[in-house]
Image (cartoon, rainbow, N blue to C red):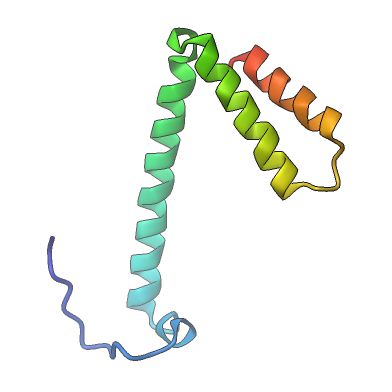
Length: 92
C-alpha cells in the first residue's frame, strides 16, 4: 500500500480534518470508488439472478424480511413478507 505523506496534522477531529480541501477530495474519491464497486457488484448479481438457485433467492427474501423488521418496525409483518416475496419472485 502506498504511503500517504501529508503536511496536515493527524491529531484532529473529523470536523477539523474536513475543513481541508485535500481531505475532502480524498474522501470524495474514496466514496466514489466505493460506490463504483458496489454498483458493479450489484449489477453482476442482478445480471446472473437466473443462475442463482431458488433456495438462495428464498434466503435473500427472508434476509430482506428480517432487515425490514429490524429497520422499519412501523410496517406490519405481512407487508414485509409480501415485499420480500415480491423481490424474490421478480428476481431482484
